[in-house]
Image (cartoon, rainbow, N blue to C red; front, top):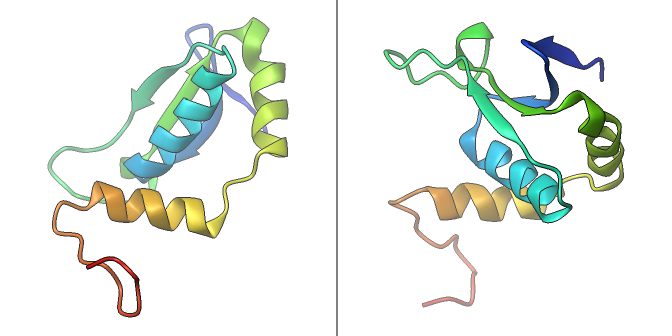
Length: 101
């Protein structure tokens, strides 16, 4: 991934979904890498794709290599993403066949 820079900060991850941003930010913060979130979402539309939906995780230039390395090692699994998406949904209903009641 080619890192983008914004006013001295380096983008190490971008997404259109808040839960992915939350997971990645937590991984970086847990590793001691301070982050800043920059959103380019248009508040008038609830888009999750395209230029009007991007949210960026930014780090200081001196932390960019460590952040990119950590993110390339710690790929998010489908289970992690599913769990985070369901937890973020206030109207979440457990899927059929789940053991929770």
